[in-house]
Every structure is written in C-alpha cells, then in structure tokens.
Length: 185
Length: 304
Image 1 (spheres, rainbow over the protein chains, first blue to last red):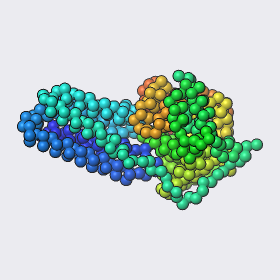
Image 2 (image 1 turned 180 degrees about the vertical axis):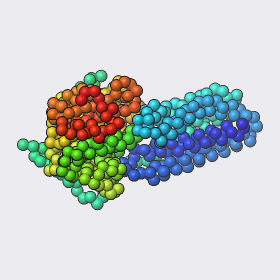
Image 3 (image 1 turned 60 degrees about the vertical axis):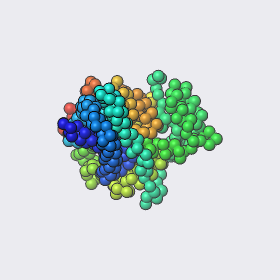
Image 4 (image 1 turned 45 degrees about the vertical axis):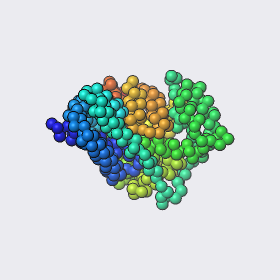
C-alpha cells in the first residue's frame, strides 16, 4: 500500500500531462494528416509530466527525510485525493476508449457526455482533490504538500500552452488564388 | 437577450457580392450595431480590433477568422463531420450515376472556410474517380490557406474564391457545414434558389434544440481559445433555424424533394447527433437515392 498510492498518483499525473499535451496542440494545425504532430504534442506533455512528477516526488522525498512522520500523513492525503481523481480518471479513460473504438454516434455521445464536460471541469476536479486531500491531512505540512502538488499539476497545462501558436499555412507553391466570378446583372 | 443575435465574423468582413472584392468596414458602425443588439462583450471585442481612421484592419480581421477556423476544424474532427457527409454523399453520387448524369460529378462546398470537409473527403472520401471536389468561399485569406493546406498534402480538390452558385462549371451536389444559420429571411430562400441548377444538396448545421446552446457553450469553452470563435460558436447555436423553416425554404426555392436527416426527436437524439442535415434532390433522383441510402433511410425526418 505504501508504494502503490504514490505510484498510482504519479501515473495519473503523467497520463493527465499527456492529455494536456494533446489538448494544447489540438485546434492549432489544420492539416488532415497530423498524427505525427499529435504524437509529438503528447510526448511533449508526457515529458513535462514526468519532469514535474519527478520534481514533486523528489521534493516530497526530501521533506520526508527531515520529517519522519510525514510520509504516513501523505499516504492519508493521497488516499483522499484518489477518491476524487480515480472516478474522474476512470470515466475519462472509458470515454476515450469509446471514442477510439466505437461507431460515429457512440463516439459523439462519448464526446458530448464525457470528453467535453470533463475537459471543462478538470481544473475544478484537481482543485477539489487538493481541498479534500488537505482537509484529511493530519498535519499542516502534509496539507501544504498536497496543495502544492495539485497546484503543480494545475500549472502544467498553462505551461504547455506557453509558446504554442496555431500552425498557419505558409506560402506554398500555389501562387495567387484563383478568383472566379460572374458579374450579377 | 435579443432573439436574433449577431455573429462577429459576419460583421467584421464585407464583400461586394458581384465582384467579391472586400469592402472597408467601419469599426464604430459594427460596435454600435452590436451594442444596439445588446451584445456588449462582442462590441468590446470589436472595439479592440485594430483600425485606421475607423476602418477595421482587414488583415487583422482575417487573421482572427483564420485562427478561429483552425480551431473550428478541431470540433469538426471530433464530431466526425466529414465522415457524416461522406455517408450521405456515397448514395447520392450512386443515384446520380444511375440517373445517367454525365461525369465528372461536381461536389461544391458552399462557404467552405478552410475547406476541411473538401480536403478530408479528398483524403479519405473514396467517392470515385468521376468526382470533383470544389470548395468555395468569399474570404481570400481562408481560401489561400485552404489551398496551401491542400497542396501541402497533395489533396485532389479545388478551392476557389467564388460565389458557389456562379461557377463556370455548375455543381451537381451542393454541401455545406454550419452555413445555413448565417442566412435569414429572404437570404435563406436565395441561398436555396441558387441550388436549382444542381441535382441535390446536403447542408449540415447545428441541431435546433434547447440543448444546443448549452452544448455549444461547453465545447467552445473546453476546446476553443479564440474569443471570436467562442462568441460566434455559441451565437451560432442560438441562431440555427428550426427544421421546418429549412425544409420549407428548401422546397419553395428549389422544388426539390427534401427531408431532414438526423433531426433530433428528443434530447438524447440531440446529444447523439449535434448536427442535422437538410437533404434535397430533384424529384426523379429521390427514389434511387432512397434505394441507395440503406440504413441512413431510417434517420430521415418524417416530412419528406
């Protein structure tokens, strides 16, 4: 149990970061074939997710060295956080699965019922997890660590957004655009 | 709120219908119109757009439109819009072939914007070698970008700055996505009247439902970043015509046999199919079309 909770939270954080990477790229490239573009975006999100998760993990490990009882307290917080995050993550993954595998109407339903609304409430879900985790924390330090860790996860998407611009179609070989019209008499 | 809201994208660019040349747009006039209509946030957005001597900077406006259309394409991709149109076009083209219509069969996308549907059909459509895909829009910036995108991916389609109903080679099938609600009153009749020259049409627009504005708001908040796209996306959902209005205008103006496709009969229907189509074809094509429609036939509205 001691190792499972932090690992589960780290996996959730990295998965969420990968989705963030996709989201900040989506709607920025109007090509039809752009799987590579999205793959790169997801990898970018995942990379930053691994970085921030490692950073937060290292910080917690360091804090636990100086405060021996902290890790046990953080496990209580982690358990509380997971009560909020796990249902959200499970439903999101089910929605993703349906969207990826089912036929058009079911995919649309997955978007309308799960993927769209869940994107919108994501910051609130993370904030709620932070509040619940901090509320259940046995000590102030554990509560603070919980809030900071959730804050880092919230900051990830804005960080990924920095420097992202729409890929505007550059001047190609097409020359001028053909104007075709007949005068309306 | 007023019943007939205005879309920013309809106001900040203007064209001469005859020559398709852009016309200068007065920023204060647009702001005044939006304020008079009670749309203060839209007015604030337009007030921030660059202008010289009160004339809106056409380049800046077109760039805002371009960015909005790139974002809009993401929604079309998520809701599989090109695939839905393809499912209707396949039987329609077969009906045209059966009726002996001479190839090439020209599909014209009216108000194609960045030409997503046309480019996607060119990429994945498998509509047949006898089919030509043409996208028309009056916005030069959007069409230039669409052409570059098509060239970049070597897609076989034409994109033209043109009035879709005045092409040298008229279209056989007219299609559009999210265009119908831009036309009100007589303009809607004129839009359909322009298609008498063709053999059929399939026009998709947002479902007319109490859910649509809420759904549109949610998706534009979740998926869009451009303020223009967020504003116009929600307004579009509030401006959509009821199915009966569209069918009545289509029948009166074209004389075609018409029906709605994927019209929602309840809230679940609106959630399953956020977009609905107005489908029309010449009377002699209707029976062959019904034969080829297959399972899609069950999704036609009762008013045929």
